[in-house]
Length: 420
Ligand code: SAJ
Image (cartoon, rainbow, N blue to C red; front, side):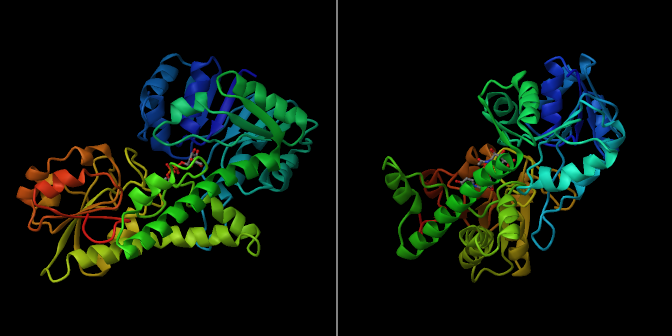
């Protein structure tokens, strides 16, 4: 295995391509977006991820990584394209199908095809195998097919790509073993081999576990608000129990993973996946709870203005996919509130951004929606001078409450009943 073609140069494909190239493989990165190809071929990156620029620059500089619009012959094909949700919450496998079809002319005896994209259990067996076998070659006999789900945390992708354990599921044990050899060349964590459907389920289970636990935290936080106590304090003490690990409450669950993957189980097993479905609804309902409380804070103020701190789905990333900040901002605007957005990580034409000063000018409430570290470093006195009403509503437990209170702010926090 010397040549690798990575299909999809996004958050997973690009770092994977860069790491393979810096580990000696000849790598071709393929993407449908011309802008992405041009950017990568110049040794630059189109997404924000710590350390990625250095890796891509080195890989392009060494000549081991190239980017192109179409696949070329290779020993290994890695499919790392999005698997978004359709409007009806079913998995959209179009990108995976198109990627598989694009490599058909290059599929040969001995080729290894790896699916990295998070996919509903059964995808390799029931969707990919039939597509790839249109060539007349037999999966598991003539060529290998395996699922190796990515498990990296945005913001720590490069570290986790190397350090994390990997689960690799093959259509046959031999397929798993071959894919295992490839990953063993750069993974320092343990590699576990299994069948493809189990590997697919493992990945979905990881994110479903997190979604259900975040839903529990969010529900408990709303109960604490009704009780007039602080969820963070209750959770901190509960977590001193050796077998309890309460997650953090927040404005909702965003990102392309945790808010999406549980639906893959709900879609296939609607009568069984009841708890999973409820958890999704609880997390998706958090933005409206945030809107309601924000509206309460600005009630009675004529022509109220709110400064939304954050568009990204979580701190220190530029990704706004499924971000709960978006329905919060839309909900406030629908309620007649002027909302100005300040997110130093996001540059997206769909959301008119303001410079910090402009975003704060005349504002009646600072609304923390994303835990970017920059916000935590704000000087409350300086911020206060630009605002009309000194109010802060922190949905991320990011701000130092006592500092903001000392500067004369009314501070409210998600999960804390009344004033903090
Ligand atoms: N969140 C909470 N409370 C928490 C933890 C997270 O409200 O206690 C929110 C975050 O603010 C964010 C969302 O949940 O909006 C998801 O963030 P995250 O950091 O938990 O996860 P992702 O989506 O960035 O990455 C996850 C990771 N999966 C797990 O931790 C099980 C990552 O390892 C996966 O590779 C990734 O999904 C993926 O691609 O599937």
